Image (cartoon, rainbow, N blue to C red; front, side, top):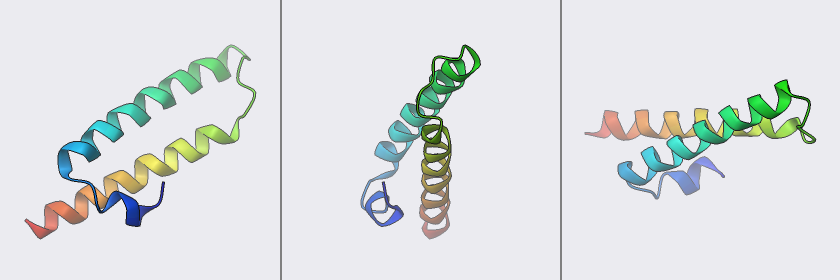
Length: 64
């Protein structure tokens, strides 16, 4: 998901997405630790999405 798309969401939706991505990251880490993860690139993509969401949340906080 692009940052420009995330900017259209409200703060509650961003927090919801952040929770979803953090949960997914935890699941991916467990799969990686037990050698069940096939697509290891997904971990870095989820981390980047989390960083994007946090950046957009910071921007929205500065606006208010």
